[in-house]
Length: 75
Image (cartoon, rainbow, N blue to C red):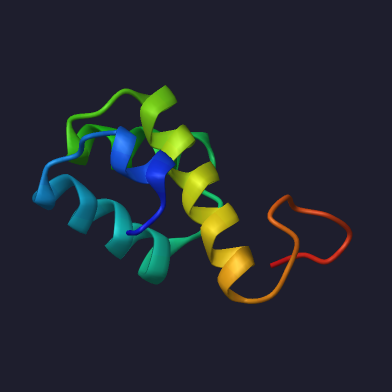
């Protein structure tokens, strides 16, 4: 990740791998239960995990040429 905000979270390589795998293979918008499971697997709080997904979604939308905030077009 090149985003400064993502780097500020100071995640271990294994945590980042689990988060990225979840983002690409499971969902970009985890529901409460999925978020809880991902957080537990990473050893992060649900709040930090949710923050990571929010930042990662903004980065994904920017890379796709979409607005960084979710608007009327669902991703």
